[in-house]
Image (cartoon, rainbow, N blue to C red; front, side, top):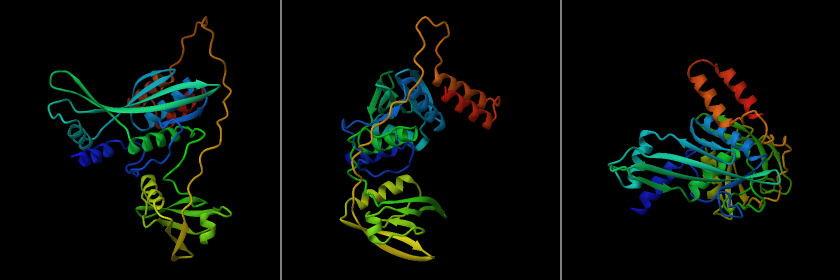
Length: 304
């Protein structure tokens, strides 16, 4: 039963990618799911609100230091949620994510949490908090996509580094990577990877999305050496790479200089970026704004 509950919970936690390795991708010094943003909390709340809206989530509440979004669940996820929470006599479960922001010297620290809740037959609310690698990997990926950076000292115990830069290549239902640069003395260079090679497999796995790629490098992290399948000049080849882990984060985040907050005596009412974004979404849904107009207004709002 515990194994079933774990599988159900993992399937409900997907945010930006549908499948992630069941191992921690990044471990922050605090151990929490957190990232740093260059900017004041109100600006960062706007960035995260925009990312929620892009993901078709609903902004439930927003303040200068906290954002709560609801991520919709499809029918299958709803059924799995009721199985996980153990109550079939209830409303469908709902899934929420909270982002708390604190500022230190112009840099915002964001910690994320998540939970699922449902209303039972007699009105009580039952709640299950999200935890573990599936949740942390997904929500960290979500914050990174909104502009977040790893805190100094973050380690990557399950992230191997091959040592090359690439461009995405679509090969039918799969994705691959065309090598544009190979770092000197890297595992890739020592194995003979060359510019122009197309990396198609890592540790025996192909990838349709970023989640598959994270699964592949997590598998590679368990082995002293691992195979990388490539195509070179139309010919399939296999290289054997020595495992090398991504080093801990040492780069600090530079504070973003922003205008000072308005004086308490100012007569103009403060603008809630999250509320304004929600209004734009409603206008788009009503047909009052075209998609290009919506995108332009959103960029302008997030740049305030």
